[in-house]
Length: 316
Image (tube, rainbow, N blue to C red; front, side):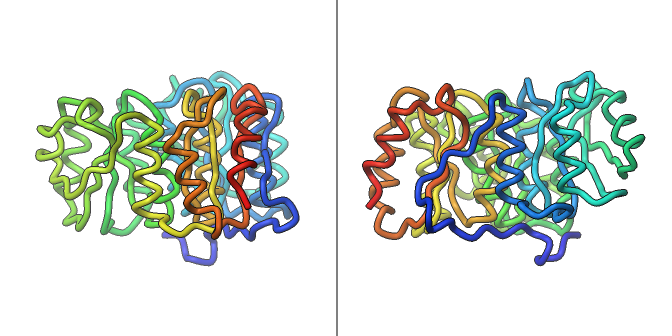
């Protein structure tokens, strides 16, 4: 169980009210987010490691990373990426804990062995499929949860949009298909008396049948991924001082950024790379009088200069 003091905290950078955090690749963007969140060497309590090229096993990872007091970093499946190895060595003390997400098809035993050879204590959270992996991550969060989030496991936007809120609440992110609740997810939900089960997305993402089967208490969704992210932001971050924005067309930037967003008590908003959705812009504009910091995750290919400038124009 993680004590409150180990959760990372983020103070706004008042000199740079709008800041882009990015690297040349998704792996390097995750590293830059880690450096922003953990600027001091050996300051993370642990590291969570996810596959860089596919999302399923990583979807529930941001709340875990925040609650174990570390960044969520990315690697290739077959071998530990050299830049990630360097960042782990910078941010984590010798013998520190690295949690690998997913089975060997997601992150190979070769990666695990490399980490062990480098002197880290390595654990793997992986199940037979993405649904069971999410449950194992949920169990690793510790205490019986008061709240839980149910998102589609078929796509990533809803899961990354809810990552910061879930992290702050130490609430698990569980996965489902649109029409069927997996046995592993069903088993987890039935094991605990969870006060609030938030079902994320519209009925195309998660049907009313699944909502009822899961014991849903509230649905948060919109007409599309942009509106769903804003619905989550309004529910859990009605008066933010910090907001974060990432592309809604790719998962890694928003997923790694979710840890930073949680540390700043900020929502994760989504944007199209080439245009700022009306819902996203509207939320930023409505919150603008309270905002002291806005982070944009990813380079110009992820969030274009035009969108960046559009966000700037909404800020005081």
